[in-house]
Image (cartoon, rainbow, N blue to C red; front, side):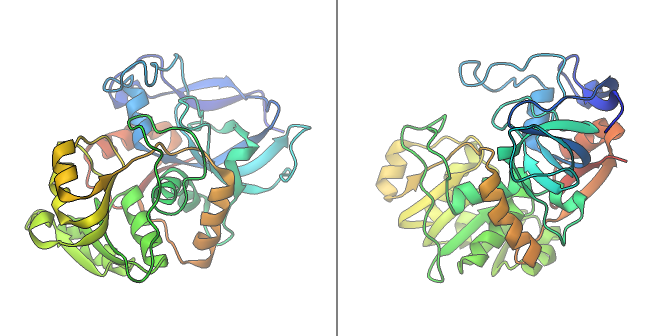
Length: 336
């Protein structure tokens, strides 16, 4: 069993990376349905820095500001240190990974130990180290729930209709915008696994990386606008979003779909005129889906790329790296 205290990164105020500071705090006790994890690695995700900033661009009615002090983070890989009496399927010593309590804001992963809902966990792929396993959950589940199977019936926060993935096969044509990032590089591989012909959009330095992951075509957006060369696509997965996303509508065939991972706005009249659809969803923790993804990771069918690693106590430096953008894969915190 662990000692009574541990090192954790806590927020006492909202702001830039400098507000991420190490604290000595009590080791949590697992509640009903939970296990205690000895954390070996933590994946860094965009919601982590949104929380750090106090969610300034999110309407309070959609997601209220988090309560302080707060240990951020959702994505972990580690070893089970204790198990609540009502938990089945996990035992002390098991290696597991997971995305904890998302879309809640109190995952508590930036720490040496975390009390984790067993339902959010899956066995860590045996052929992955903890660093690569920690990079998989949020990015992988986002790609999975957008492209493969939603896996829940919660209504999406920004649209009336429930999201429905498009069936992908060898006849499908897919474009992934922002393919070099965490969600993008995993989505590219899942679409390829399903047989689709995939075009990757990223800056030129990512071309060999993305072709190695299975991209059939590559567009360097710093040289060519995707909407000028890509046409008649069945699906666009836009991991960038924002106001520029609407330009990708014209790459679709009639009946095609555009899925923005991040917030994007479209002119309903233009969407109707083009005969296309747009749809998004909110990724949610799902241990069963993560186990399915884990089997693909274990077989090498899907790979996790790691952009960079930082010790847990240097979480501020990891967030600073994230702020500079142009990531190739995931940033991961390591826990000694």
